[in-house]
Image (cartoon, rainbow, N blue to C red; front, side, top):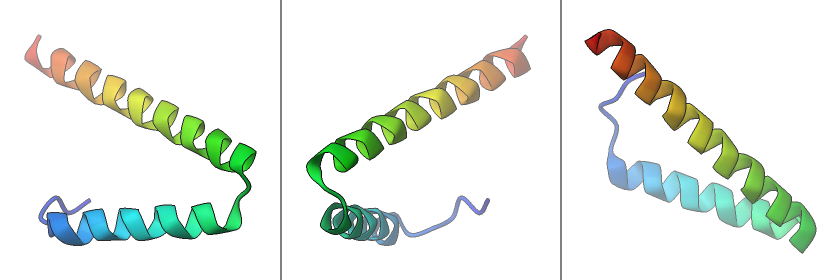
Length: 57
C-alpha cells in the first residue's frame, strides 16, 4: 500500500463513506457496523504493534 497519500483526501473519502453508509442503514445496523469497524481497527493496531515489537527483538 502506498503510504504517500493526501491526508485531506483520505479523511474526505472516509467521511463520504460514513455518510453513504448512514444514509442506507437503520440505527441498529449502523451501530453494528460501527462496532465491527472499531474492532477491526483495534485488531489491526494490535497486529501492527506486535509486528513492530517482534522486529525490535
